[in-house]
Length: 494
Image (cartoon, rainbow, N blue to C red; front, side, top):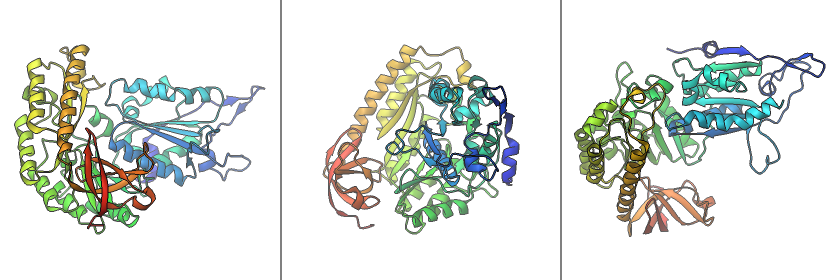
């Protein structure tokens, strides 16, 4: 089903701001700067015509994709991005903080960031403040009570309806949009941060109930996008010159299970991978509970699919995995790894691991280290457990001491560094196909690209000539998290 655009505003709660008073005590009608973009036809009202915005994005790739969509809508309204050179003497008219609630102190970081903008507003300056993303969904109206200067609080499910919600803001209201909603197909075009590689959402939300995770609370239930919509978006991206697409989902292997009839993610991989002109296809994030061996087969049989799997085990202990509510065992995870190594022996495997989960013993932590030794990950995103609001594990009385958590984190990071260097060392002397993305910001006469494994490669070259090109690079030097090489020609697939 679909919700009409007008219903998006009905789903949000609004509160009319108190009117300001002039020096004589007379109330002044206060529309905010957005009136210039959204209601310029009003008679007798002078609006600022050149409006600029700034977006700060925290957290995962899903947030990056959401920010790109919000930027597209702001630009459709005639509001342009802040330019550090052109606008260095100006202050932004609208700021969006797209928040992440995963890490510790997430809420405090939000209030700290919006502090300077709130101060501007208290001093009478006209600035619109928007808090979006997972902390916004988590806090809702409470965020307005603590930071009354904020104009709009919106959950991630409304990222593609920012323009609609801003109409109420332009009319002087404070708006909270955190109701559960069906996410509609987006007719606006995102402002992509890259011209080479693009993010494409295929499933929103998550139905899992991991005891440490707030994502199901903040991003809602799973909603898969129609195959036709995904293929259309990818086809359009290719026509615009994009060479690589990454399919996004909090639990991407669950794609299609909410559909009638049900669909398989492995089939989607094959379908999207066959879009004419697409050079590379990636996807994140896989869940060991749902990742089928058919997905590995699909990657092996789809020429555009990259040799890169991101599969977070979170722990190597079955007891901790059960306490986490992960729904899989270390044995199931290793079965997936064995299948990847069998079918795609050169593939990179990356992961997420949490240490210091409530009740984790030293023996259970050692099981995680043992898992790392068995797999030899290409890289691991590591974190010490931190309690998140509205999650069961946060309330347990068997919390691990902070000093123990930090000690375990240091140990796991040392192993991670050794394995990352070991995995990349096999590249030395090989000639790898690299997709050039950007200039090396530290060495302007070099460019940066990635191999199919996701390894960063730096080499001499002109970014204006090579951006978006697939080139062959002979690897001369292998560091822990990057490679260096020499371009030896264009790739055959270019």
